[in-house]
Length: 383
Image 1 (tube, rainbow, N blue to C red):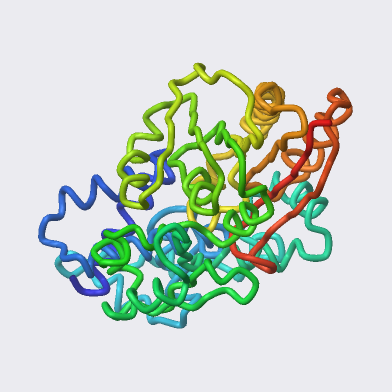
Image 2: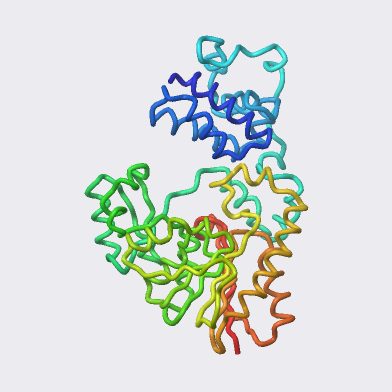
């Protein structure tokens, strides 16, 4: 595919996303209908789509329209590319620019340049203070790829060496050596020996750092397990027995295979069927995902104030429920992938106010300025 053809594909996909279709579904629909596109073309189109969603407001301003064409025109102007080399009207290329499109567009104002929904900005600034702008700008770029070394299988140096055998370069984090940042060859990961033999798992640095703060011994319940990444991480560090639970069992479909590859045992509890008490309970609750918007940039444009309010009620209910499974003297870890105070510090304060049997041990907020994704951890102990 030519650059113009890739832009034309991105325009069609972006229009579907802006009409309400999730990004992954829109990309999958295009891919299935475009068998001619090779893996390089699919990756390039995906990059065009996701980069434009990360910078939707600023590129729409530059391009003069919040549409697929407006975003691609904004990209041309942002990068200094002559748009007439893309909007040629040739076969598989976007139609030529109209006079209105040529005359439209302007540099984004200070707010649009942050590429966040306008309604979220007051809460964003209140939560992040002087770092608000820097974090917003970091969210406009692609997130790095981080791996967690499965310490049950290998030491960090051995895992990095296994990756290097297949030209996948990775560097250990200075404070957490078992976290590897992939600097080359990320698209070869799923076919690598290190991956097949369970030496490494995909996991962002921020949740890895949060998990490193938790007790690595005794029984553990991952109450909102999702894919089970935290259950696997804590089992590899020595916690056990480990139970994974999620109200949507479908999210844990791949967990048995992942645990088998990692050489770990994870008990899976049916939805709503958790029993007993545990030394540590992890509640990584549903949230706005504001800390991961550079990975799922379409989500930040779908979130509404009403959605956020519903999430706050859900989070409080899950935290109360999870607390009931903590053994005396045990720990409760509340986690979100959000940067917003309402989902983090405010939830902790409200929980402690009506649960005096729990005491705060620590709080941590992670961001692209300090780790990688935006993430929050509050660790409590039951008296």
